[in-house]
Image 1 (cartoon, one colour):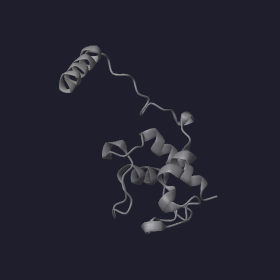
Image 2 (image 1 turned 90 degrees about the vertical axis):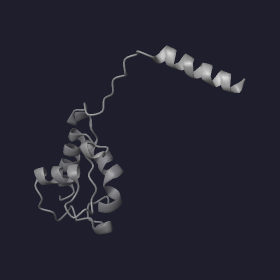
Image 3 (image 1 turned 135 degrees about the vertical axis):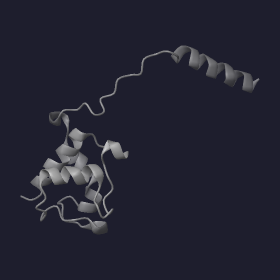
Image 4 (image 1 turned 90 degrees about the horizontal axis):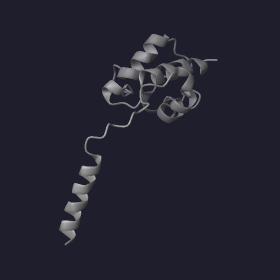
Length: 114
């Protein structure tokens, strides 16, 4: 009886949901104005780089003394560091950040130098 109920419930679920359009997602569609870069930095970067950018945990470079260009920062955040100490955060590498979010974080890092 339990098996029959489970099969019937599964069939009913498929019958009701079959053919429905997937619900739209806002992933990757956020504008830079809608992104809070400090929140993203705190979620993804602070553990190794610290809140001020100079923690250096697990071999993380100091963001305060770095002279890296915005383009280079975007590259490293997206694809990870060449030495493998920093993992990639770009969605193409199964990371959680969209291109717009990566750009926002890369620009936010500039504020840590001031």
